[in-house]
Length: 484
Image 1 (tube, one colour):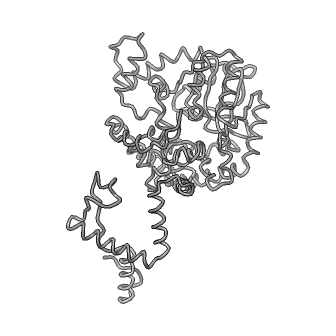
Image 2 (spheres, helix red, strand yellow):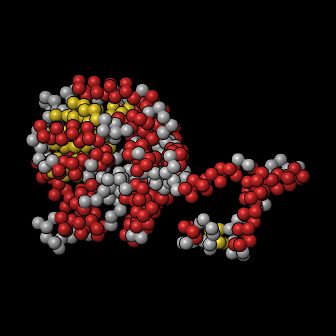
Image 3 (cartoon, helix red, strand yellow):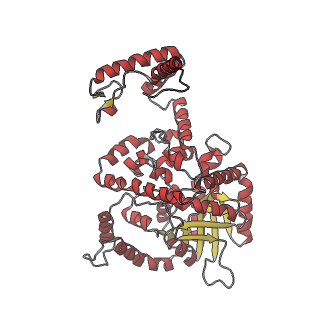
């Protein structure tokens, strides 16, 4: 997937003009936010768990190589194979080598954003191998040749009739007039189409929500049974994951399992939590003959020890997206690469370079909702602000924007002059706003006033009001600020 992050404005404008997309995302935020709030409200220790999770993650990141080495030893000790991949090319080549060695023609896949990062499907097709997505949302998108628009609900941008039409066009062997008007009928048809492919597949590829260092296990947390079928029915199971997914112990896992579903979908627990620890052993009825874990770096280790390291703590719940007003308005495709929303705005510049993604950290109102709901307390807005600083420092912003910031910085370092000028500006804007207190036109704010009026100030700045109230309070002898 070629990044188009710096076309965010154009892609966002296109999304805003798409009535179907607006309809789909208009219903998304409120429902998910309400479900998360209800689930969190029923768990009094939720805030304590968030703090525990952050502490665990910071402990891991401070000694990441040790935990990864322990995980590797356990995997190899259980008969598994571990492949380190510094780059996306390394990971793709490792996966291809496994597939070619066992003569794989068909590969089933569980949902994995890391394989999206690798562009794995197109790569395997080019090598003569057929990948089949088995997560319902990913299956629909593969039929439509579209990318996911959310990391947890990849097809959330589609309406029922979109999916119905896709199934009719993609399954011509079935009666065209069959009833696909309900979610149950769509699920039943997808299950029917995928069932045989699970048995035909030579290799099953999944992601991993976590890697457990003390047991050498990988963990997937899902609501569909496709992940289990993918990793147990194929002869070879390949886990594709990234370095920061390792956690020390099973006890640590229990902390994250209480946070992840509540933050992602407002569930107390998901339908499936599956741990894989090596290939099938003697006496096992089911399981793969080979177990491989491909661990990708792809630039993440460069974040270690730096000011943006905390983005590696992400557990991919998607809560930041579900609460982001920008994501809720334009959807995931506008972000132009694998990771949308506040997560993408903070992580993508580290993975593909700020020069290819500078628009994303600017796609935020900095309202702070993403930080407030993050289960591991990642300071997403701080990270985005640092990317903006780097963008400005490398002169990637427009000359007009740099000049404007320079003027503002010069004024802000002279408080008396700043207050005088802002006071005059507030008075002038209040005068122009008239009785309506609205401005239909304003210099340097055409992007705003083209679509809606700008609210005019009341005539005084905050500093002026504060000073006046303090002065009044000192005269009356009041202990605090009075309210007008």
